[in-house]
Amino acid sequence: MIEVTVRVPAKVNLQLAVGPLRDDGFHDLVNVFHAVSLFDELTASEPAASAETLTVRVEGESAGSVPTGEDNLASKAARALAARAGASRGADLLIRKAIPVAGGMAGGSADAAAALVACNELWGLGLPLENLMEIGADIGSDVPFALLGGTAVGRGKGELLTPVETGGTFHWVFALADGGLSTPKVYGECDRLREAAGEEAAWPIASEPLMAALHEGDAKALGLALVNDLQPAALALRPSLGRTLDAGRDAGALGAIVSGSGPTCAFLAGSGTHAAEVALALTGAGVCRSVVTASGPVPGAVVAG
Ligand SMILES: C[C@](O)(CO)[C@H](O)COP(=O)(O)OP(=O)(O)OC[C@H]1O[C@@H](n2ccc(N)nc2=O)[C@H](O)[C@@H]1O
Ligand SMILES: Nc1ncnc2c1ncn2[C@@H]1O[C@H](COP(=O)(O)OP(=O)(O)OP(=O)(O)O)[C@@H](O)[C@H]1O
Image 1 (cartoon, protein in one colour):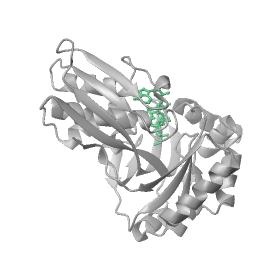
Image 2: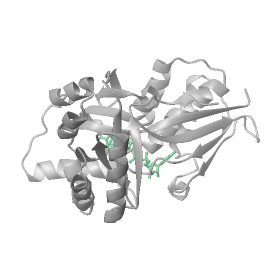
Image 3: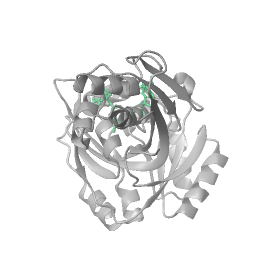
């Protein structure tokens, strides 16, 4: 095998219930992940330099804000995989980025998942998905889901996944913002806001109306059930997102929510045509950097060639 290309989706969180802060610095969650058709692509090739070197190149509009050294999550994942295989292996990784960087759509985690799948194949390791998910969980809480895809409930820090059957395809519009939001800062702001309000974090539980809407493929009910406990924190750190959410609601979206830690905003539509209409209205409102439409659920990281 000389090179392997993997396609990996972005995610949106349909329910993000943030529970108490744990001793390890993570929060216990109920995290309903949904993979959408906005993809990064990663190609892993046999290294042009020595057999043990790992290099990263990034292409795409926002490539400049992605690290290419050892901090790159794809590089971290490839090194963790090599360590697990007990071998010192190299690869040249080329990432074509379409998922917004630090956008709350798990772009870095997606690339880590793609690197695990690509290098597992390139190096002929043959590790099963469960092993890749275990390695991925140490790289980032969202990595196991990027491997699994579809729709799934994540518990623990988001890595303990149970797949959810959905009764149809959902149509989405995403408003991409200028600049990103730091995930640890948004969780920290969530804790700060709760403390200031004298609120104790409740143990997170999955929303029954949300689960019923997913099973039935009922977009209207799903729109009403979307919930993100990080949204007040993201809005406190980036107040302009309030206008973006309002513009989507005014455009007739069935639901409007900050995606994960933000600043991307996600809007649910009733059909592909409705999504195009909401996208057009959002673009006209001038409340974001750009607008993309996508649908979900889609599979997780898969070899594309
Ligand atoms: C916001 C979400 O994207 C929703 O899916 C995830 O919870 C974050 O996942 P991620 O970007 O893969 O985050 P990680 O790299 O695992 O963690 C980054 C930081 O976010 C905070 N963090 C993350 C996950 C979690 N369950 N509780 C947390 O408090 C911690 O401060 C952690 O140090
Ligand atoms: N391959 C990568 N792609 C994007 N960012 C990366 C990558 N590797 C490392 N990073 C770093 O990680 C930070 C967070 O990136 P990422 O795009 O994963 O955020 P996010 O989408 O908000 O994550 P999440 O939704 O999982 O909280 C970036 O600011 C960047 O410095």
